Length: 394
Ligand code: NDP
Ligand code: MG
Figure 1: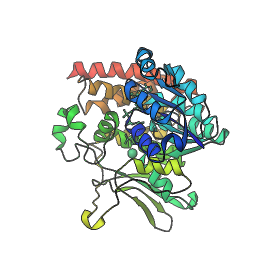
Figure 2 (figure 1 turned 135 degrees about the horizontal axis):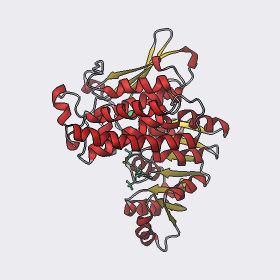
Figure 3 (figure 1 turned 90 degrees about the vertical axis):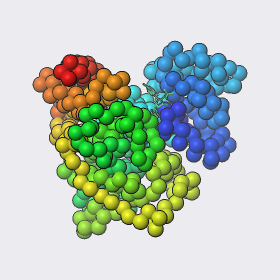
Figure 4 (figure 1 turned 60 degrees about the vertical axis):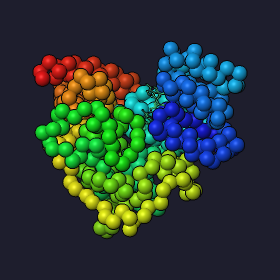
């Protein structure tokens, strides 16, 4: 029986993963090693019982009493805290879902790779903050990283049986997010609720807002560069409002392979779960006649400064990704808390990158976990200061 662990089980990716595991037979089909969550301990306990997990871990110490109470007498062990989550990743499992949101997902993913199994990577922040380290760790322990981000899963699938040397370009599609049709001058006043109204995908709150600002696509451009090892100039972005084509690969003979499907994360998660097999999945089938047309437009970089910043980050590489991601997380925290305007998020990230690069050499080739963690901390402090200044300046 295959063993699995799910990090970030109570999130949007975690729920979809849980759904697929339960449909496949739950504890009759998989041995669940660890499930982790954050504040939603009631749900974590339910899932742990349904899958008969060996251990359930919450990221927060103050949530431990509730988790313990919910699982008393069930035989599921409990633990709390960041170190306990990392330790849960030390328990070997054949397949591990990396579904924590933010840079907090990096360490558990790195630790899980040491068992040489399969890491289904939804946590794109890992590749953005420490892409070289993550891929080198996977290679060292002969582990397999399977992309779960829909675009990267699409690219991965389009590349089956292909030679990377024949790839000319990768075209990432972007829905454009909730505010894609807003006039430019209104964007500065966009509220959290407005940025959360995603037209096609139901996802966690943070990635949904990142979709509206295109920071999500900026992270994905970097993720593409790191995961597929291609040059930044080979990565293109196109707005595709219907979210039916999940991405495309262009080859040197001019052919373009596109991956199409309903916008349902259970497809890329299920593909990673069953890889290298392709098994039946409970996703809606496309009705192309009903869709009628698929449309495309070029992204406007004035509207989406995040894309330009991603190019700058890729040009520097090294620790620039760690600084970029950390600054973005802080800017997003401030926007969600109502302390920063929607368009000011990119300003905070840019201010942080400028300041950090004036103080340290970001393009340092040696990317160790300590370097990454230090850069992450430094950028968070600087981004919080930049956010404060922007508020005052308004
Ligand atoms: P959610 O916010 O829905 O879920 C995040 C999960 O991580 C929850 O289980 C949450 O616990 C837990 N968590 C939050 N903070 C911490 C922390 N500091 N330490 C440990 N655990 C924590 O996010 P999503 O599921 O939307 O996204 C997860 C990852 O997948 C992100 O990297 C995202 O970019 C990526 N992704 C998501 C897609 C989607 O469709 N949702 C699509 C493509 C990629 P709790 O809720 O209990 O507090
Ligand atoms: Mg995506």
